[in-house]
Image (cartoon, rainbow, N blue to C red; front, top):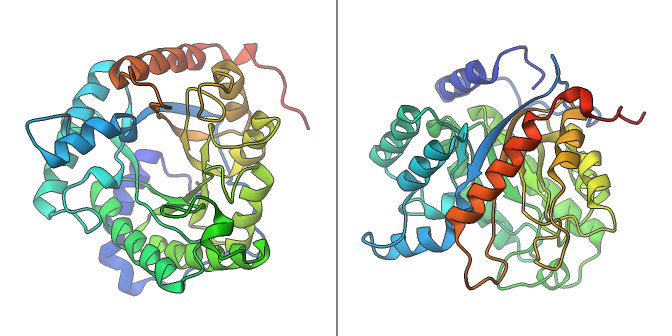
Amino acid sequence: MNSPLSRRRFLTASALLPLAAASLSAPSARAAYTPIARHSGPRLRTSLNAYSFSDLLTANAKDATKGLDLFGVCDFAAKLGFDAVDLTGYFFPDHPQAPASRYLIRLKRHAFNLGLDISGTGVRNDFTAADPAVRAEGVARIKTWIEVAARLGAPTIRVFADCQAPFKTWQQASSNAPREKVEAWMSDAIRECAVHGEKFGIIVAVQNHGDFIATGAEHLSLLKRVDHDWCAALVDTGKYLSADPYADIAIMAPYAVNWQIKETMQSTLKSPRVDLTKLVTIIRQSGYRGYVPIETLSMGRKDYDPYAEVTKLFHDLSAALAAPASSEPAAKS
């Protein structure tokens, strides 16, 4: 963030912003989209993305006697030693509508009692769709969950930059509209969300998902077109589908406000496993200060055990974070 406030003070201040929303000046947009100003060197903290437990959370939503709820995700994260949790919106009661205030208050206090911050949340949207009603529905949903994020004390909300079901590609979703036109649709929708995010102190974090956004250059192109100070990148390390995903990550790290660190580089069992030492070096060289959530996926494994996979990835990431900074190669100019 450009502010000299600490992250914790920022979260506290953000929670109070809705009260002053009516008195805010017009939303600001940068004249030229630039990397986030970082101060005092990198500082990385771990977070657990709840989607790692997708099947168990979905089962619990259907039958409270089965699976796992978000309170249980928090318990597991605290026991393992995470600093925070990233609580995906799909698994809240009443989604896609906002959860009841009583639920949000209980969950926020539960996380606090466990010593956990809430690093983010996110919902589904499709801004590649040719139908403007689909895009408008996504904007409305994100605005609702921006306000939920503010009440939770989460600084960011994840927004997709790719198509969603029933579509399989952005070309299909857009009825084969030119890429330039689709990017314009998306940037207009995301900018509207960012304007709302500014009112509540919530950063709209745009995630690459391997469809419309498959490279760092494409990711940055969209952010530059949005060109709003309350819009930044969520870097998904498993969804750059280029020959060198680490190069894409290096492009986007200076613009990142949140992450999803995956087990493999293209979210398939056939793709290389992530080199966490290399990844952490890239993130540190950007000066990033904040959370680095991990997210494990079943990737078609019938024997997928989120407890085991999260534990392994957490320990591997913790080891990479513990490596002395002096062991890192100098950043390239």
